[in-house]
Length: 297
Length: 270
Image (cartoon, rainbow over all chains, first blue to last red; front, side, top):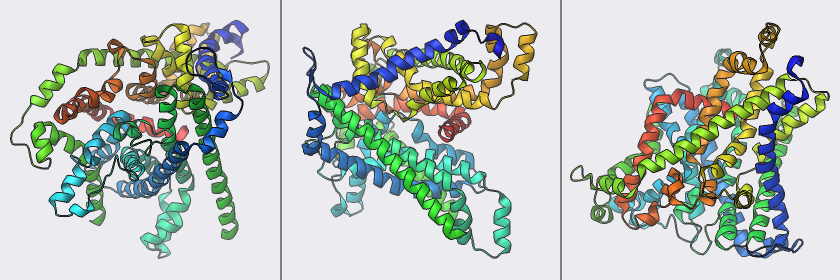
C-alpha cells in the first residue's frame, strides 16, 4: 500500500485516535500518578508530599479491609464461577431440545448494567425483605437467615455470588467455544481404549482446555478487581467501610471525602495489585504447565 | 437424563432474580413488606404507573441513545482509520508501526477507575462538564484499545490483492477505505459494535463522575438514584427497574446470536 503512504495521509488517518488516546488514557495515568504524590483537597494547588500517601496505605485499617474484601470476592468468585461455568459448558455441549433458549437465558445477566444487577440483588439478599431470608423463614429454616448484606462479615461473599450470577453464562460460553475445538476422534479413540466418560473428562477434555482455563481465570481476575456498582448498590461500602472493596474505597476517598491525593494513591496501588496478581498467576500457570509436561514425558 | 435435569435446574436458578422482580412488581408495598413470597392477588399495575410518572423515560432513553450512538460510530470510524494506517501503510521504520500498535492496545490492561478523577479534572479544565461531549470523549478513548486489537487482528490476516487492484484502477484513499476495505471488515465491525454499544449503554463510573445535571442523565445514572428517589417504595424501584430491563432483554432476544458470538469473540481475542 505504498501509494497512499505519504506523511500527510498517515497523519490524517492516525491523528484522531492517537490524540484522543494520549489525552484521555496516557495523560490521565500520568495525572493520577502525579496526584498520588501530593496532598490536594480541591482548593489551591496540590502540595508535594513524597511517598507519604503510599506509606499511609499500610497503616490505614480501611485500606487493609478493602484489600482483604477484594481478595475474598476474587477467591470466592473463582471458586464458584470456574467450576460452575465449566459444568454448564459441558451440559450445553450436548444435543438437547431448546438448547438455544437455555443458552440465551443463562447468558442474559451479562448484558445487563452492573448497576442494575446490584439493585436486583438487593431484593434477593436484603435481610428483611429479600427472597433468601423470607424463603428460609417460610420453610421453617429461620435459624439459617443471616445478614447477607449490611452486616459485618458476609457482604463480600454475597458480592461474589452476584458477580458469579452475572458472569456464569459469559464464562461458560468461552468454555463452550474451547470445547467445540476439541477433535471428536480423540473421544472415539478414548472410547475404543475403554476410557470412562469421567476418565475422558480428566485426561482429554481438561488438559486440552488448558488455555481456555487460563483465559477465563484472567478474565475473572480482571472482572473482580473492577467490581464497583454491585457494592455501591448492596451496601455502599457500609457499615463503616466494612464492606468496601478497593474500587469503592478509592471512589469514596476521592469524591466523597475529597482527599484527591490519597485517593489516587489507592487507585495506583490497586492497579499495581491487579497487574502483580494477574502476572503472578500467569507465571505460576506457565511454571505448572512446564512441570506437568516434564512429568508427562 | 441427569444432565437435562441439571441444565434446567441451573437455568431456573439463573432466572430466579428476574422472576422475583416481576412477582414483586405487581404487589403493593404493604404486601411486599408483610408477605413477600405470596403470589400477587391481582395484576396490580399501580407500581408501573407510579414509575412512569416519576421517571422521564423519554429523556433518559434520548440521552443514553445519543451518547451511545455518537461514541460508538465516531469510535469505529477513527479506530478503523488508524488500524488501516497501521496494518496497510508503509512506514520508514517498521519498528515504529509495531510500537504504535502495542502502545494502542496497552490500554486493555488499564482499569477505568484510575482514569476517573484525572478525566474529571480534564473535563473541568476544558469547561465541558455536564455535556454529552464530556462522556463521549472518554467512551471513545476507552474503546480504542479493544477496537484496534480486533481491527488489526482481522486486517492482518486478510489478503491485500483486491485493495492493490483497486488502487491500480485509480481509486483514491477515501473510496479505498469506504468501498473496498469497509465491506471486508464488516464481520469484525459487528463484533466491535455490539461490544461498544453494550459497554456505553451500561457504563456507570464515568457517568456518575462527570454528569450531575439531571437533563443530561443516562439510564445507569437514573437507576443508581432509584433507592434514593423511591426511598422505601420497593414496588416503585422494582417496576422502574423492569421498565429498563425488559426492553434490553427484548433487544437481546432479537440479536442474541450476534451478541453472544460478538462478546465471546471479543473476550477470546482480547
